[in-house]
Image 1 (cartoon, rainbow, N blue to C red):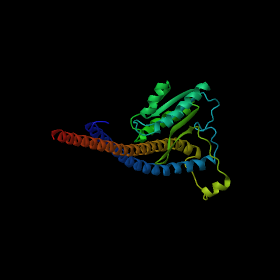
Image 2: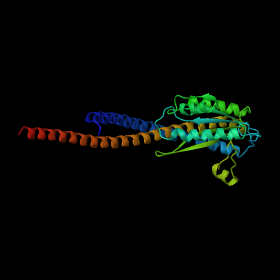
Image 3: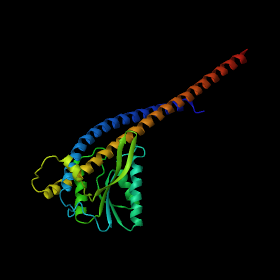
Length: 292
């Protein structure tokens, strides 16, 4: 049985760990609430842009627009991989990294090229170990996305696709479902598919005559990059919210495990103390008997 002093030091160490994990859980909960509010605010903006784009694409021919072209060959793909800069968040990183490795394997089997934009050190380091090509690295602020990163990512995606450098652009990230559930997904960002609206639905969406200035084509050219930016920003917010939710869950589990360990060690320590006291009493009794 471990010595009494050793057990007491272990209990103190576990108790300190419990305080740290409990504090990390509280911090993650605060950040999660903030990101959920940001996601709700951005969703209204994104929905309005997509509604306008839906109405415009139903009225004009979008086949010639560079962001809506269908590639004749799929020789090069760009993937935006969103992971975390820090660990201690359960299976958050391993889930998206698994999708990225699967994409690498499929690209190798199909003899196609694959490049990445990385947000988060974990995914970046994994891709470097796998020998993947990284076009742009934006590690350092995975848990707190800002719009300057969105512009950098969208610029590479839009310009590369419009110039024909990439035939497809995808996003790999964790979609926030709930505090206990985050779903790794891969979404196609480009090319944009033309949204077809039935006449009856169009009449419901647009009951009045609307005059667009300037032309519908010019409005579409202006709105599509903003729609791409809003999708990227929303994915970053979803990824960050998933990270904090996963960390909160992991730290809650770690805190509960620490409490259980403290109880177990305390029980062992009490038994050790009782055994020591019993042994000392036996020595006193034996000594008294010997003196008679």
